[in-house]
Length: 65
Image 1 (spheres, helix red, strand yellow):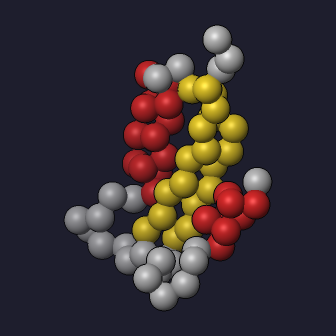
Image 2 (image 1 turned 60 degrees about the vertical axis):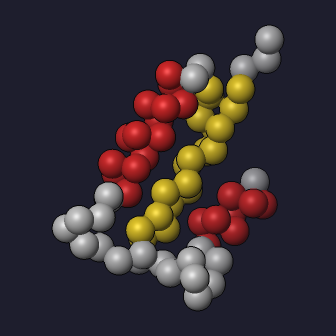
């Protein structure tokens, strides 16, 4: 069976104390991928970008990869 591959995308549009930071999102996604036996082949992040007003740059890059 071939190895499953995954790309991780994390973003936060407004830094607030109650929000989950990018670092925590990345850590959780990496743990999830490892538990599923997936190889993480890329990580993309956007900090302080509103997805409702435009497509975040890292998400555009992920689509091009």
